[in-house]
Length: 541
Image (cartoon, rainbow, N blue to C red):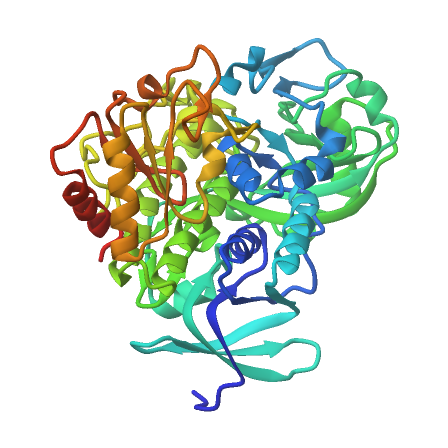
């Protein structure tokens, strides 16, 4: 490795797709200098990875991009549900589910909502915002080699058009370079799981007549089950641009070259039932559904995130959401360690927390594909555990050294979603008034740890301020109560103590990623000593 160094950065991000761009966005929000390199010339041009669940939208809300994401997604804002039909022209059809959030019930749990935004629309929003926050993002730039030592990572990157190479020295490297991750391969990190499940070819096409046949059925996707030509139809603009996922069987010797424009167009006509429809094929991209999770997420100063760490069946869009949430979990920990207010052991909790979530979520994703009879996947449905998708999206739990008092017996992903305020769970959402501004408690969690105390928790509040000052830890403390003498005033009729599982004398410590790190149900004789021990423990100092 060349000993000459051209540039130094705290963090080098490899991969500029959804997860890498999200990592850049989150790093920028926390003021962490970084360089992102992506071998492709631009963001994705193919519409895919479109479902952004509530937890991801909460992260985008906190990062200040929610409105921009919804604007980019506006064309599909009225699309809901998954339809299953033998063809679009016959009577044999039913909704696997009609609404993602029937009756608006999820508003009790979150200040935001699910969003259908294709990857090719979402990535430019993330790119633009990351650049505005000071991130250095270089496309057409590939990681050629890397070495690490006790102090950092030295990487050689090459601009693919000019052939010019440069040597980058980084404190840490985030590998978000996809399911065929060269970084993971070079580190010799193996994978667990069932491996490949099925294969599809994603076909983009134009068909002006199709909108008339679809009519007012504004679906997210329609699984077409004609035995002679099955597949999944997805709208791009609800007018003339569409995507069709056609089953591909390489295990029988079928090649990508077999998917000629003529074959694809005829397959789409047969599947939809519109045999005389004009179909213009505009693009094709193969994809592979798999269930794989990396055996470890960390190697020294290098971390895997997104598809380099886990592959999941696409049903439910769990893969991209899990990857974005990987980045969010990792970035605050890097910021804390680089900022000197957390010990390096905090970085070990990234894999300890995120890997079990990926194992549980990838199993749920595969089960959901079977339940929906995803084209190309022949596995039979297993159990009825898929009824609460919210449990997978937001109910996952952490048990690590960065959580104080988590119950190790609690399932990583429960069968049902409940907002309990337990250590290791996502902190509950509560609407509050702060200096005349209505906000969610989730809006408080990004840059620092936060201590919430009840109307009788003055001892905890004062102790928190003294401990944070003495330990030189960035900590925000808010008193929640029914009148303006408190920092936060909940909406009438809501009870923050019940929601967070504590009492008016209690306290809840929330990490910058919005997860409950510790909870006290009531008062303690020595609150300052207790908080000192908790913060030192949670921050691995």
